[in-house]
Amino acid sequence: MSIADRKERERLQRKNIIIDAAEKVFLSKGFEHATMEDVAEEAEFSKGTLYAYFQSKNELCLSIVLRGLKVLICEFEKVMNESTPSINKIELIADKFLKFYNKYPNFIFSFSNYKQHRAGCKFESMILQDIETENRKIREMISQIIQNGKEDKSIRSDADDGKLSYILWGELSGLIPTLLQEIDDVDTVELYNYTIQMMRDALIQRKI
Image (tube, rainbow, N blue to C red; front, top):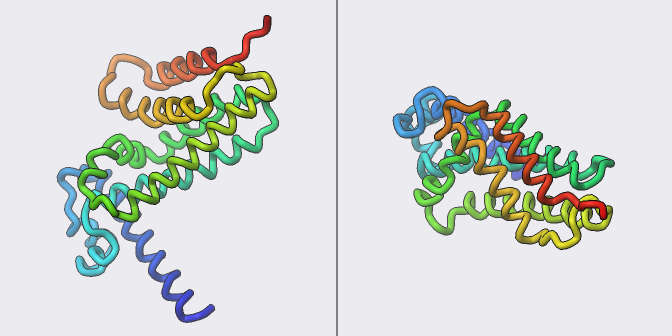
């Protein structure tokens, strides 16, 4: 391994340690009450080292979002390779997202406040660009599922895959945070699954 490769690996390791620390601090103290000093202490780095990687709490929170999106994409790719009618893959994607939420609740917290954190970052922030790239990958996968569904006749032929990729991903990524923040007298999972079933029913190709 070259010196440059070793330095890059060490840089990525430090960056991941900081993101891990931020997750713990934000989850235990809450984003509003946590400070960059808290994160530096948890990561066992100096503040100078912390700021060399992240300019603000907002960037740290967006880094949690970015890492979560990469994990989600790996899970969604497994769905893409399933040998099942495409209409079923819509439900499988939704199920993967729900399981992901249960395993990584801090990602959902960060994602639900995405607009706030985005506003707190510089417009040219590389993290923002990377997040949009990952979001685009997810929309493209959903679009491909819909296209394939029209071909295997499990999804209605007049479905607009481009528009629906935005709608479906928006529904999936926005539904759970909304339910958690605003509804306390309804079974969240039951309502989530009901919504996904309604989306599926709207897409299914009816036999004449």
